Image 1 (cartoon, rainbow, N blue to C red):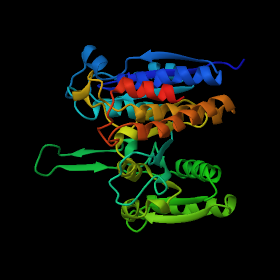
Image 2 (image 1 turned 60 degrees about the vertical axis):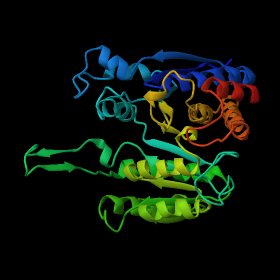
Image 3 (image 1 turned 90 degrees about the vertical axis):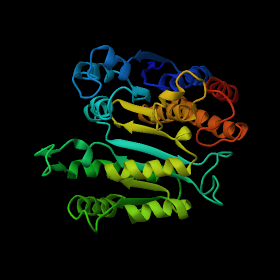
Image 4 (image 1 turned 180 degrees about the vertical axis):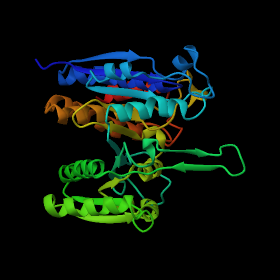
Length: 367
């Protein structure tokens, strides 16, 4: 019998534990059906633990997660995350001290964001349906404006200067591009990879992306059609002609922006899932929406994005471990989500016609 997969469960803040609970419930059902073994362990990293430990809510005085705790997470096959964000903790403390720290130290250099409109889900785009909105964004996840370079000069004075540095390394750019080319090659028969950047203004960092994109494509992926969009044009085409896209690859900052736009055209944050992937290490999967603290404990938050993140977790682990049962389980969960959406009344962002637990039960029934 194969070794059980090990999953670290980080419910996090607000409604995060509620939606992750439904995903774990679905995991139990699909694992029994596909006959694979797994173990889970809960971790309490988040705003409540930070405050309980004496952390200052206005400035980072404690580490939300330590290096030793990250090393413990490294022993797991995957991390299943609910949400990070506490109303009593200033923005940036948890996001940088917990989320970005995990991404960087675990080298989760790929952010994978499927943009799929499920049947029965409302989109704000007129005359667009599931046949028009089905593409994937591959976002570089550890460089660009997010690496933390910059600072202040004369802070708090009328002459204050703030800098934020953007970096792109050939190593970081190339490994992201190669992963995107490979993903595009196996995704479907369309085989078109679109680079999204701003080469006409960011003439250093994005020139590196452009040159690497074409050099790698010419040398190793002649079967993949290549396309390019400036990021502003990409935003317009997401709205006007989303059916044009297959697979997109994008630097970190612009990827952060266009994937939220992608989430809205697929029906909102309640159905959008993402993965932070280290192809040879520990990856982390999460719903894209925030912690929504005002809905905590009310059984009203939509768990489909978290269940979709579980589907991604299983699909990615199944591929990495060459385990057909785990991969098949992920595909089955995704198919159950597609079947569930038409059964939910007024299925759109913030509305689903059933409670959180009842939606989780429906996915289990459909499995």
